[in-house]
Image 1 (cartoon, rainbow, N blue to C red):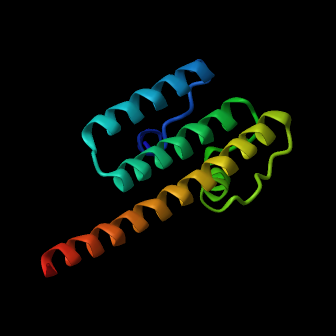
Image 2 (cartoon, rainbow, N blue to C red; image 1 turned 180 degrees about the horizontal axis):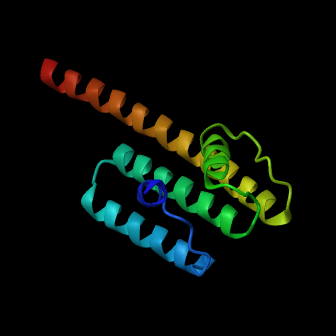
Length: 130
């Protein structure tokens, strides 16, 4: 009984699913989110979440990490803060570099979106005053 309940809460990872399947699912999910969401920040949050989940799966499938929870934790930290991954194999090191570049892009996008918001608010206030 307990195994059935835990199996529904934490499904086992099917090792038959390959790396291309994980990448394809992530791309399909991000395209769907891009069509549904027009707001840049919401779209960025969805893409970041998709990247964190899919890269966590890739690291488990390539045996860089033994548990999905630890991989997910490390990938989230790497994606958001640039913290290095605990794994030291070559695949994990390449992923670490890609996620570090992505985190710089994310913060640049956030800075640009906030700047555009304040500039448009300033422009609207000037137009309303004249």
